[in-house]
Image 1 (cartoon, rainbow, N blue to C red):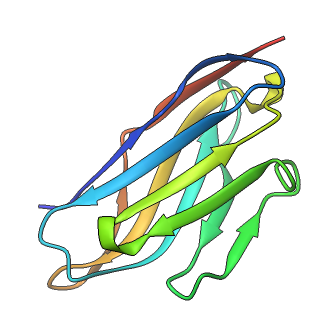
Image 2 (image 1 turned 90 degrees about the horizontal axis):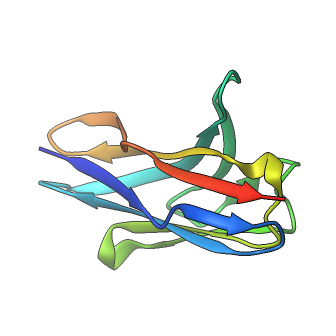
Length: 118
């Protein structure tokens, strides 16, 4: 059974930083593209950042220059370094990955809350 577990969320003041982690565990053959999403109360889930196996990276315009996504394939872990946080970054953050076990499936983590105070 494959699991994605996020960690690193918390309460931070505007201008501060947090580093989120998402670790995959289980009988994994390989991991494809990994994404970070976020969802604020009353809003739709939005894609924040993506990284492919080849290292191609994309960011939402709202986080460009402030957030950095990276992955450590040896640890089956993806990170989201968030700097210069703003109150509008407040949301539950989720990771999502295409993972090959016996077949490719999409897996979601349980989410980690990020709250940025003004």
